Length: 372
Image (cartoon, rainbow, N blue to C red; front, side):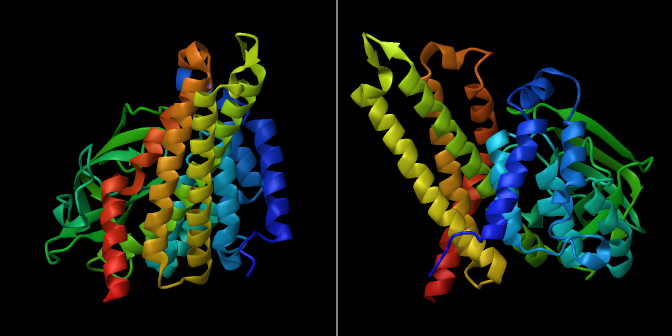
């Protein structure tokens, strides 16, 4: 059985890497980190023109109608480059929620704009920082088509065109999903600080903002879990790409740096760190490939595969980015070193979509269900 990507998917990887080499050099995330822009607009335009924002959107809505495997390839390359663009919010989440729960009118109005990159979507579930509360504790409320409440932190919420929001209604006990145009006068947005400012986050306050219910109406916990499972596999590929790039940087430096008349890579302690990084990325790749298979085949094992991919890729990216700083020594701790950029992104992605504790519970629950 061949688990590798096809020749066409390898060629897609090659083309995406070429595009990122031109539009997203190592200086690109640093410019966002130190500047006032929330994302790299030129890179976003180039990514959209190449059709990457349209990959998972059906052709009748202006997309390419490709499968999830192509998105996995793109996600890994974006992770290697630490691309400072709202790709995950708009493509992995907003687009997927529209495909899963949007009405025909909502799909017709928004999917072509998402495909072209004209519109940017985001997901507003959380209502406080730290450990994400379950959907049952959502307090945002919709009454007579108007939404009130606060969502924070919302990834890319300060730059998005619209948001998919979880909120309650007067008639439903469980939260449902609503579309909100973020240019509505009842929406107030405020950028919040995170460990990685190259991926902006916002606090969004809704005061009687117009909200459209998504279809099917009513409780949406099943849709939320399903879309987050799919998105977690794509985030895991971003983490895998970042982990492997951090490993490469550490390996190259260990071969280049001379101390006491020897390459530092010849010292046992450095060898052990590099070996541990290699093992972690190899395990993460195996779990990511399992996730890619489950994603592309809509397998029953998708929840288990999503949790395993997310947890192993989180461990690999955090370990590799931390060890890369250690191997670079004093230079790795300086502001000029790129090692810190990978460490910031690793810790941000570790908390995305619920954090490790959520995915540990998800993995245990899915294994118990499979064994029952």
